[in-house]
Image (cartoon, rainbow, N blue to C red; front, side, top):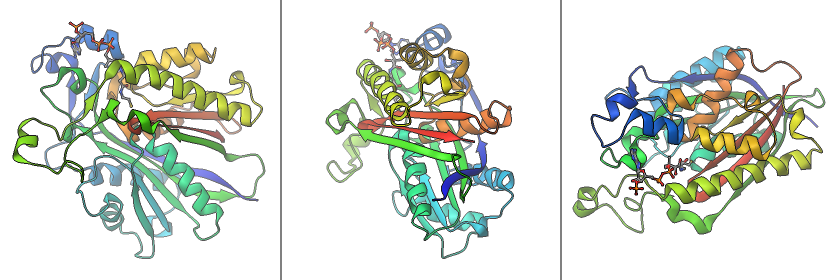
Length: 328
Ligand code: COA
C-alpha cells in the first residue's frame, strides 16, 4: 500500500521582531522573567494589514518550490489555524485563490489549536490514502498577535506570528513516509486555554470587547503540567505502536511553546536535548505554525537526512495532543 510522503516544506516569519526588552516597556515584565520561565527571547509580529493567509501563501510557495511542483498540481488544501483572516469563509479558500490553485481543489480549515498541523497531516494522509486525491498541501499559519491581550502579561509574552507548510504525495517505496500518528484530546479541560467570547455561546457584545474577552485566556500552570503529560504519552504511544525505542529517533520536533516543557519531555523520554529541535527562543509559540516552521528549519539546516526517523509531538488548546512518526 502506498504511504504518504513529504515532498517539500516551506516557512515564513514576518520581518518585525518584538524583543523581550521592547515588551517590558509595554507590560510589567522583564527579559529575565520571560527567558527563565519560557526560553523565549523574541517573537515575530505580522505587519499591519498582513493577514494569516498572506503568511500562509509565502510558506506554501516555498514548500511548492522545494517539492518541485506548482500550486495547480495540488488537489487538497488543509489549513490548520485558530486565526483565520475572517470568521467566514475558511482561510483555505482565500489561500487557494491567492496561490492560483484550481477550483477543483478541496479546501478546508482545521482547528486543533497548536496540534493543528499534526491533525492536518493525519487528515490529509487519510484522504490521499483513499485514492481520491493525489497531492496535498498542509499549512499551519497563525496571526496570534491579533487575538492576544496585549495588557495581559501572563499570556502576551508567549505568542508570535508565522507560517509553515508541507507538500504531501504518495510513494510505493516501503518503510518511508508517515509511518503513523496518534491524536487525542482532553475535552474536559477546555477552560484551561480558551477565548470565552465571540462564538455562539457568548456572541461578541460591546461589554465583551471592553473586557477583552475576545482574547486568549490561559491557566498557565495547569496547561504546563498537562502539556508535559500529554506530549510524553503521545510520544510513548506512537513509539510503542511501532516497537521503537526513543533512542532510534533522529530528531524530535516538539510544539514550541516553552523551553521548559521541551526539557521536561527530554527527561521523561530519556533522550538528550540535542535530539530536540528548538527555535522557541526566536519565535515564541506560533500555535499551528510552530511544528511546520520548526520542521522546515530543521530540514533546511541539514538536521534531517534520508532514512532518518523524525517524531513530531504537539499539544494545544482543546486540550488537543498529537504525534506523528516520519521516516525520510
Ligand atoms: N512577567 C513577570 N511576571 C509574571 C509574568 C510576566 N510576563 N507573568 C506572570 N508573572 C508573575 C505572576 O503574576 C506570578 O506572580 P505572583 O507569584 O506574585 O502571583 C509569578 O510571575 C509566577 O507566575 P506563574 O504563572 O506561577 O509562573 P510559571 O512559572 O508557571 O510560568 C508560564 C508561567 C505561563 C510561563 C508557564 O506556566 C507556562 O509556560 N505554561 C504553559 C503555557 C503554554 O505553553 N501554553 C500554550 C500551550 S499550547
